[in-house]
Image (cartoon, rainbow, N blue to C red; front, side, top):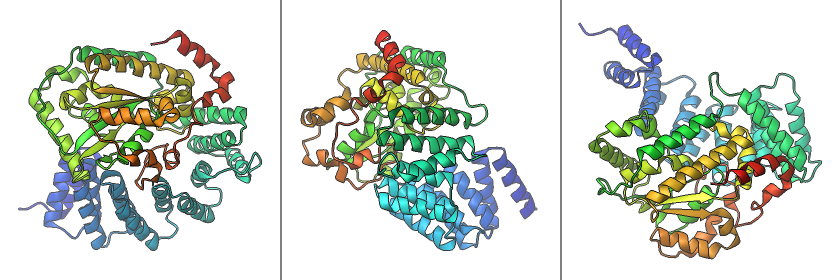
Length: 488
């Protein structure tokens, strides 16, 4: 006797709730083979397929859910948009899905937020402001929309009305810690832009405290000893350079860009992506995902992982890259924290070239402090923690450079903005790329930029961020003293 519909549904749902993704995925596939007219089950299958790294299959399953009359179809269109933009880099398709969601429900705030974010990624400021403004028209005072507008608006002066609106929203009784963080960082940006530096720093200090308070239960604070131990373990795991032959090769050929967050990595990527032979890959999670998944616990697992398993990971990386960027010659993998994984990268791809971005450490730390970052970046909430993290990054990069001196290029942001031509020539020569005049016209590139530097790289090259720390010399004095005492 074949299982009943109820038993198949129950088994699939139980596996999904237990987090047994692959087993739940197989259960839903069996269920829908026997009973295909179940739109909610197609929806659940799509969720599982994306979790399993099968975005195109997830798109197909969401389409089945839509065709079979799933309720709240606007949410399905939103989920399809997220897959198209984040996994498949199809921004046009994502915009079409968001438009379809809003056609069904013009007041659907998640679609308006995602539409505004999509416009931001492409540097379309007016369109992004219109999307966030539509949310405020529906929900006056919405803190997320107000904070987003605060991140885009060019203030008219110290008395700009938006500054008052942000202050008012922050003073609202009942505002959550997450809302206070978003509003506070937007206020800090506005105050900085109008020259009210002491107030700007205070606003961001309070916003960082609110961000810490809004972290999920059980989220850890930055642990300096643990960070030092990790760097020690990586140095011990890779005592000598890898000299073996590559088991996998492109195209496309990855170009790895890493370094401290806010050290110029997005700028380098845009410069390179303006070259005729290079595509911008953005912040790919492919290498870090290996260390969290098949290579966990990392780096201890390196001692017991077979060469064949590592070769398979390299081949899988290249297959994924080719699927996202078909026909590309070179693709940038601009993941700042890949500085932790240079040893692994060079084991997977012995010919890989790594660009290590760097800038004045005080400017770097200040830029981190002024941004609303993911809770996983625990070092970002405190200036001294940021300084410690930066020193650990420098310590590990120094080790990698002793192993691979010819394959790692230090790219100095401050030197580049001061004298672009020689720095660019050195970068292109390092990557065996011929000169291309388009590289210094990077601000004209019409691509999606999904980092906090999206607006900076839409402008021609400028020097105003170099030495910005001097406006905050008093607040940065303790960090400056410590960095001078703890020189690498």
